[in-house]
Amino acid sequence: MSAIALEAHGLVKRFKTGRSYVEVLKGVDFQALHGDVTMVMGPSGSGKSTLVAALSGLLRPDSGMVSALDQKLWDLKPGRIDRFRLDHCGFIFQGFNLFSALSALQQVAVVLKYKGYSKSEARDRAELALTEVGLGHRLNQRPAELSGGEKQRVAIARALAKDPQLLFADEPTSALDGENGQVVTRLLQRAAKQHGAAVICVTHDPRLEAFADRIIHIEDGLILDDRRVRPAVIPTTPDLIGA
Image (cartoon, rainbow, N blue to C red; front, top):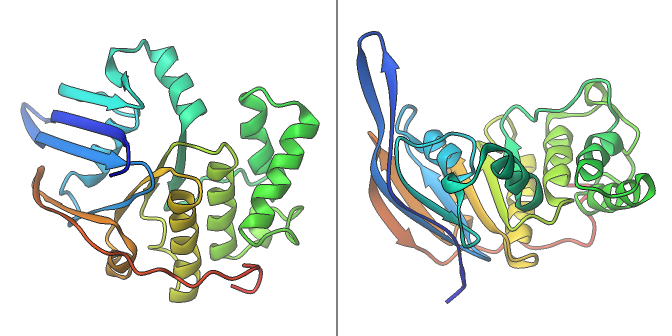
């Protein structure tokens, strides 16, 4: 059994709408293991993105506990939570969240500089991360010069360059075609299996179910189903440039 990377108990989150409150999470328990890809699936409005925000230190729950890498996340001061995310977490978003004026290399290196790497160390690590996702030939291109699949790979390289122990992905394939979606899935698997990260992926995409170690279905703020499965293994290739 792999070590527990993150667990939560009794998560509740409410949002105010007018004079009333909507309860988006209703006492959710959750656990993720190092080396696992966990898919959190459910319809729009089910609470899955709110759950991941609470697990990753982006959104404080109204009640409940999150233990991440043996730290009680929401007991930390806000600055310490920010530092925890910087040091231990990687994030991949549906909208890529790239800076339009920065090259692919700069997108990745800037995060590493915040972690304390020197300019040359940050550049070397950024170049390596981009090469590993098949973009060694696109280092100097800006987002406007990249395809959707390439933009998502830059975002993944930015997340993986920090060697995170927790990797959160929110709809990482929804804007991609099947071929690029498979590349992204392969990279998520690599983060878990080769780097030991706990990968937690929110998705509507049924194509991803086959490659999960664990599938959690959430609806109306409650987990309806939580099961371990045997993941398919996407054949690895020595170079993703043509993927």
